[in-house]
Amino acid sequence: DQQVKQNSPSLSVQEGRISILNCDYTNSMFDYFLWYKKYPAEGPTFLISISSIKDKNEDGRFTVFLNKSAKHLSLHIVPSQPGDSAVYFCAASFSGGYQKVTFGTGTKLQVIP
Amino acid sequence: DTGVSQNPRHKITKRGQNVTFRCDPISEHNRLYWYRQTLGQGPEFLTYFQNEAQLEKSRLLSDRFSAERPKGSFSTLEIQRTEQGDSAMYLCASSLPETGYEQYFGPGTRLTVT
Image (cartoon, rainbow over all chains, first blue to last red; front, side, top):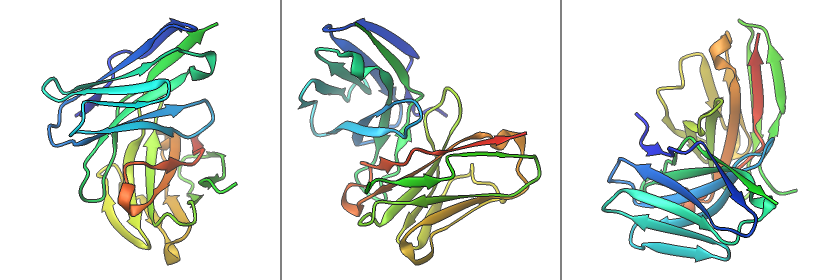
């Protein structure tokens, strides 16, 4: 049962343009959402998060949007840079308890110079 | 380097052998997690410790798997009688209790069972 879904396994974007990575979830009890970035031979690195009480959170070039009614979130990277090329994992959690994190399958982003 | 460290980084073993992996979390983090990641998948939760107490185990963690965190510091994950299906990347993460969802991952141990 894949509760967090990333339907695009890969995405290619030109340097300087916007990258949009999408994620859907099925468990309406999730109330905290995260994006992790992973380079080859490294563990995932926390990138940005959003609480369910917000619909947008921005950190520099990275913005996460949350649409609770659609159970959908997206990560926007503007402008995209070659160093952003990595696998991006969408993840969801609960703000209470021990905050178990459920990850999606990842989207491999390639930013073309 | 004060990040999460894991040893070994790679392990090749024959089916039926036992293997043990070690994770050293960030020193002030009292929460420690183990995940397994296979090709094309995201990390899948295996187990979780708060200090030395193992508080949650996934159904993915069969009887052949055991994890410990003595004294609430480093942790070990042991797999007994390895099977080819155990081949995967084993990731360790740690966090502060207030922000358990913001987890800091180690580089992982890649296990290959031949």
